Image (cartoon, rainbow, N blue to C red):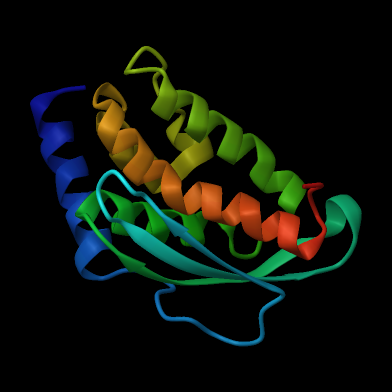
Length: 153
């Protein structure tokens, strides 16, 4: 990435942190989970509202309350925006690619077509402690899927 793109992505992370999308716990919801990153103190309470069955189960809403660093709060905002309106089957490849990119320590370039604004978070992949911050909202989403019965425990 060029220096200009890095600056742009930094601005994008800060924009999601300052003006988070879908923030605030809303009703109705089918699952509520609370995750804490004990190494840094980041926390998220996430609510998931879904409708339908099987691969056609659609994510109607993702709402959350996040406390912590800019990276974890921006990740929650970006994730919620990526998920709402899609089916859980449509989200699976997005989540899998994002997580693989984050765990690659910078060896896997993110596919912006697939992960959208999530591309702005991939600079954290080179910092293992930050990877946990960025992935915490995604892990909360997966736990909420288990709560709704979409995923097995």
